[in-house]
Amino acid sequence: MTRKAIAWGITGAGAFLRESIEVIAELSRSGVPVTVYVSRAGEYVLRAYGLREVLEESILKLYPAEVVYESSEVSAFFKASRVHRDVYSLVVVSPATLNTVSKIVHGIADTLISTLVALSVKSSLPIYILPVDLYESKSTIPITVERSKCYNCEYCYAAEACPTGALVKHEYFKVSVNPHLCTRCFNCLTACPQNAVKFDLEIAVKPVPYYTRIIEKLREIPNTTVIDNPRRVLEVVLGTSR
Image 1 (cartoon, rainbow, N blue to C red):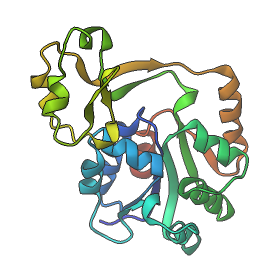
Image 2: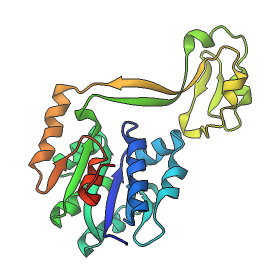
Image 3: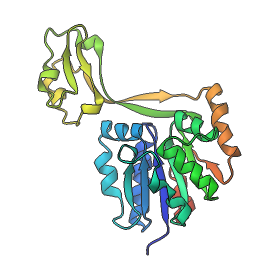
Image 4: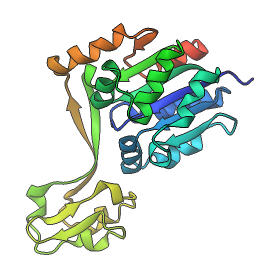
């Protein structure tokens, strides 16, 4: 049974990103077409975490289910205007960065996701937003170098083993890191004799009262619900959090 489609916005946050993709996949398996709108920063983060292909493979092959990348859209963001054509039952933004939330609460529509929300407000569509900076959460740094170990080497074998240039030898820092180029082949892990290269290093992110006051203004926007977990969407659409 096919259900009415959902529009889902992904911004450049690592927190709740994997969980959001898991929910999108569950919705697709339940016959719910999901159009995923991805900001420029969101595209970068998906690639850094090795999740771009995972997301694309999770989408139901049925209109209007697709992944729309802001980098591929013209500035008018025509595909976001589907919200005016009764295509979607609701709109989700998860994860939502502070930058995107700030634009939304101040009525600024100059990016794919902020435009999607602005049009949804005008169309009186239900909107569900997960602002990552409202809650204490855990996130991960996709790739980093533990410098205290790195300096023990005269020569960077990890950079030598990297086929994409994500790790390159540096005159002063021994090695510099560009997560955007990393394909997560993990050659560097076996090449580094000091075990200095780390993937998915977990960090704790705590809310800051100054910023939470901005985020709380989301609750003043008509038909907008602030959620604390992407699985809340399953409760709304399927009647279960599974």
